[in-house]
Amino acid sequence: MYSYSPLLISQSFLAATGTRLFLHHQDRIPEASAVLVVSNHRSFMDAPVLMASVGQPIRFACHHYMSQVPILREFVARLGCFPLDEPGQGQQRFFTQATQLLQAQQMVGVFPEGGKPMVKLTQANQMQKFHKGFAHLALRSPVRNLAILPVAIASMEETVNSAFPLKLLSLFDPSEPLFDQPGWHPLVIYRRVNVLIGRPCWITQQEREKYQGKQAKAVVAQITQHCQTEIGQLLDQGCY
Image (cartoon, rainbow, N blue to C red):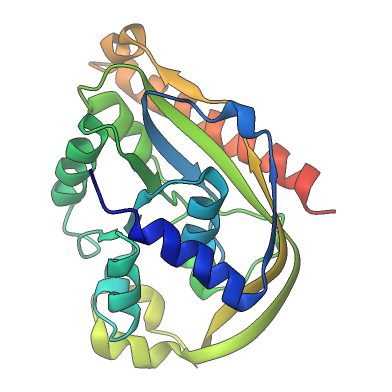
């Protein structure tokens, strides 16, 4: 069993920042099953917020650059995050590690918007289009009773600062095109935040059977759209 220290770190971190967290629809969190958590993503606080909300560690896939920048890489490692491969290199390592974690009945977390909303500040109720990798992961993983759990992080009050120039990050991760532009990396700190649990999407054997041939593209798109729509509707409820 993975150490519970990431949960304690998350809880302590939120206490230190004075973040007030409000959890909604807690009864929708599946029990005694593998869970793939899918959420919107605007802040470095999102992983601790989600862990503190569900009350257990979540092994998050994090952007490649987070494993390259000093101090930041130590922080995400302590949280139990595992980095994605470099852009353009495929994500076989991610699929392998995430599948092993799900088979061990650990929660795995994915931010399907990617790194763009972390670099370019968006409004609290806005999202980028979801990448489809998490749907492929769920359909490929040989795990029974697997649930994809959409969760919305809806900021009600926050402060935004400029952390460091984007060009500086390119020194640590030149493979990331997002850093090849002027401006500063925003630092979003939640003061009051709603966390709204969506309706789980269960991956059935019937859906896995569709994940082949011409049907595969359709079932992946359906799962991706379900999660994005669910989170979008929850954001509308939570960002008041």
